[in-house]
Image (cartoon, rainbow, N blue to C red; front, side):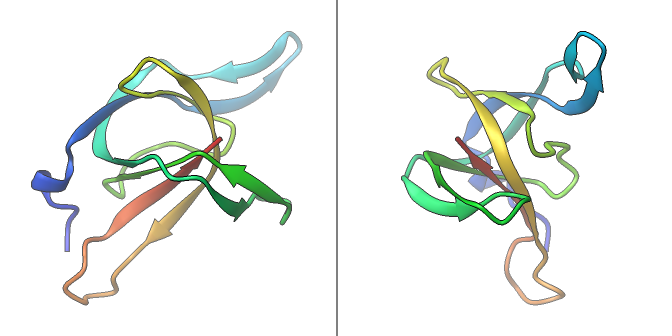
Amino acid sequence: MRFPRFLQRHAVMVEPYLGVSSVGDVFGPGVEVRGLLEQVTRLVRNAAGEQIVSSSTFRAPLETVAPAKSRVQLPDGRRTTVIAAVRQDGAGLPVPDHLEVQLL
């Protein structure tokens, strides 16, 4: 089941992390992504398995590109970083497939 449009209440700007160059981190152009922003503090694990405090979770359509270390600007103007992006696939169940983006 696709991520329903009525749940896409918030718009954020995502600059996807592309890697490292000789002058530092490289990011792609900013893209506006609509989804559902939940600003709740919780413990999550990063790619290295370490526990990190996440300040927000953004749920977006599965096709969203937001790898770890991407930069995100929230609707209130605050800038944050992606800890991890986790695919939530309902595998045919009547629940919305989406990308769960955990933010610093």
